[in-house]
Length: 66
Image (cartoon, rainbow, N blue to C red; front, side):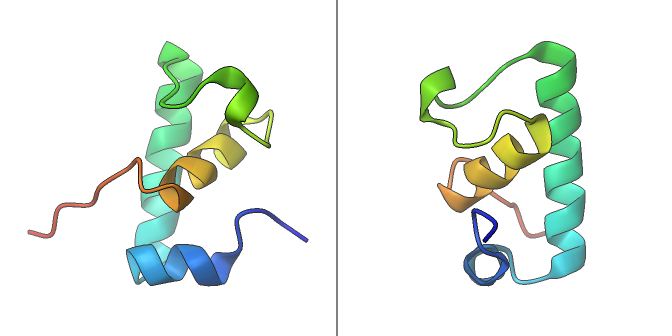
């Protein structure tokens, strides 16, 4: 089973398309800057995409509605 679950993420974000855009941008930022919002050993995933998903799941990324 994948972590975090898509159901939990969709409750926080609301749309699959918005989730994809947010996670893709955050994963690129992690790759470019190597800036993490949690400690390295707190992540379950070793890849930037999984880490971005975990940050969304832990409410570390906030979405501004315009």
